[in-house]
Amino acid sequence: MLIPSIENTLTELSDLLSQLTKDDFSCPCHGLSNATIGEHMRHIIELFQCLENQYESGVVNYDSRKRDYAIQTCTETAKLAIETIKSNLEKPNKSLILHQIIDGETIEIESNYNRELLYNLEHCIHHQALIKVAVLQNDSIKIDSNFGVARSTIEYRKQCAQ
Image (cartoon, rainbow, N blue to C red; front, side):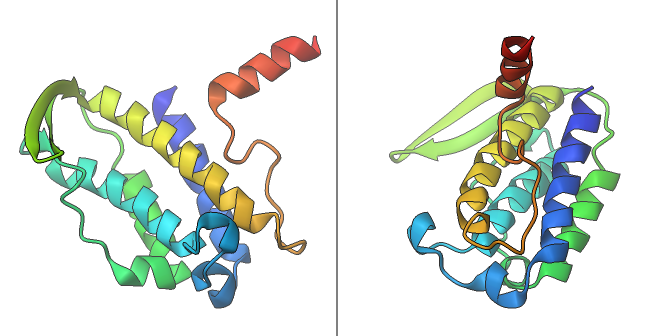
């Protein structure tokens, strides 16, 4: 169930990219502290890329990102990156070490591939919610009402509606 949820979420991002002009994608948005939709999109993509690229080594460091300017400025580059991620999600679960430096201190935490996939999904949804702030300012862009809404919130709303 996890992989299809990630694929659906990434497809939502790709569908959004198909609707955005270069200006929509790369112009600063006041509601995002002058960040761009493209910067948030790049951040989402690069965390998934870190997990994919560092899977074999068994050590994942999300701070070790490329910060690829092309992803945040070109919707076609971003869409291609998303398709590559989607095609490489299926991997066996295995133990991983999450490596990070926080306030100058190195920490290492035991994790596994499925847990990191879940983290990336939740992180993606969080950034979708931020992207939605910018998107809602443009009436010509259409997104699903659940875009950027946590899966648990969607389930809770369904229960309340019954």
